Image 1 (tube, rainbow, N blue to C red):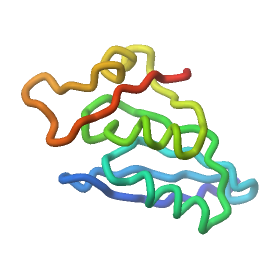
Image 2 (image 1 turned 45 degrees about the horizontal axis):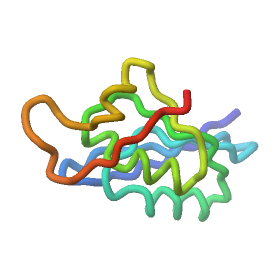
Image 3 (image 1 turned 30 degrees about the vertical axis):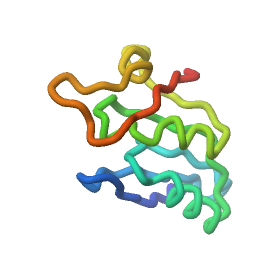
Image 4 (image 1 turned 180 degrees about the vertical axis):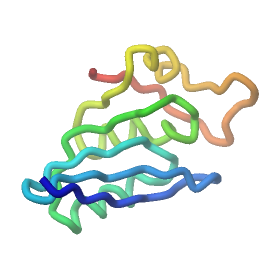
Length: 110
């Protein structure tokens, strides 16, 4: 199973999201959800004929979850995150300072 990986950066820190696909089946996942990456990820998956099956959140820093709700909706797929991420995704506020954008809350499916 050859994996194919596309990197898409977004937001003020150019945080990376990854579109990872099985090169044989075209099944894919999105890893992390930086702000301003939804349209780019949807376009990249469409261009390559890949079918996104899930969005995976690795951790809940605001610059990795800003587009989580948008990606979940755009692809119509489950959002996957560690159960410890549930409170931070429900109330996405950093500890020290507010993020420069409003981050919609989202609930992981698994």
